[in-house]
Image 1: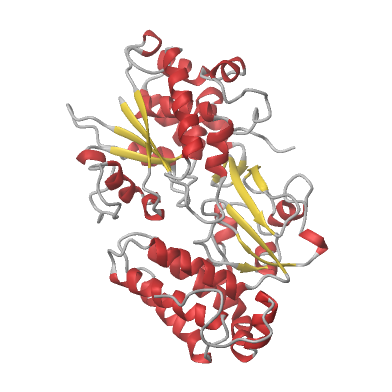
Image 2: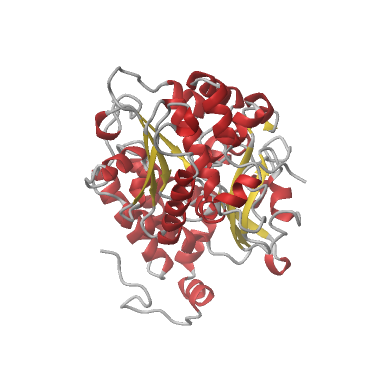
Length: 453
């Protein structure tokens, strides 16, 4: 049985309340950090742990904390990024729903380490139940003396506020999140300066993902070295995976990094295999923004060794034969799944969610959606396939934030690995339409879905 850090007590009745969480060892990390450690000691333990950002980028958390500027007389802030908007990803919502005090405890310890006296949890606006759960948890912690003035008599003050987001995917990007938190339109900022120097209200700020912050308490209680023993190589610790698609057991799983992908898909401990005994066709391993991989490449490396659920193993081969762990949104497709339809659906999302600040993203996402729509609904041309590749290249690397890359990578990788399926849609539009929609005929105006504007 795999080591559990974040979900160890998830099935304990009432674990979402302060009383039960406390009885099960909750807030012991706060007591240890505030009473026996200095802020620098906490940062050092997080560095030792090798904990990496769990929101997608995978940047070492302790190193990110060490970049925080500490000018005298200027407030510092910790902001928790709970704007979980990546299609295929729902692990942060699960954590906040079932064990909110795990996040609150992590926020207190992390804020202490950073010298922050005011911290924020920026939650996706549609997650109103989770917002209410977190506000109740904060109130419980404050009534118990773990928040507010002079916490546990240590002289440390901290207030945590929950801020509903504006319902925009772009606000998952840390600088757009800060703009939104300040009450502005959520457009990404040009960097530098980075948030560690000039973040919220122009002050030094650290933005971390829910899962990253939640792991800090265990690290402080058990030591960074113990955390580093879990996992494989530089992919230390555990990772929450949101598993969905054509699998027998969709849900949120906490894995030790380094589990073979094949074991994760087929073992009864995790996904339980493909539904109806069908064959695996493809996997989107880290949320909608990462390259899709066919079955042969997601299960094995080029040298024949099993591919592992780790940052390094999934990325091996670059974007030619590799992908990314990303946010852990693990979407499995069986032999009957349509890659063209899936790619078009992702492109619809990115076109809709582009903030419009950068021309390559604003215009390119619209063109990709329109051309994919044309292919999917039986009106495509062979030249459209190369056009999509060309547009994706013109978007990638040419935008202020990574949304442009996130929109381009799924399209480019889908054509790279499944070009024959795109060509089949062009050559056999009636068969493609009948397979996907049960329509034996197709004609203008294009049925079901309105033409992209």
